[in-house]
Length: 76
Image 1 (cartoon, rainbow, N blue to C red):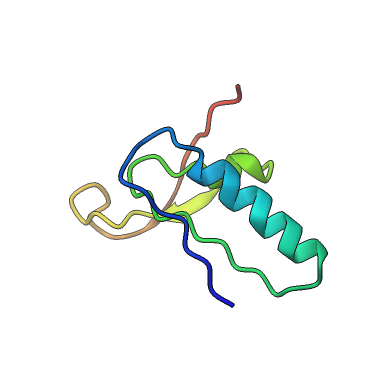
Image 2 (cartoon, rainbow, N blue to C red):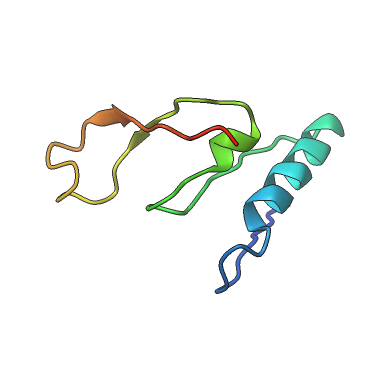
């Protein structure tokens, strides 16, 4: 099964719904892979309690050597 959560509107609850759905499916013993496709403000890790994820920048001008870097996700 493949599920995609997408909308053109911001602040619609896509990340929260994706985190909740993937958690539910994982608890039902489905193999689950979740990808946050937001290159500017990825915050899916926040929903899983990951404070400082390592990510690769998709923008060569922001990370010219495409090295891994740390991203800070503020606590609410």
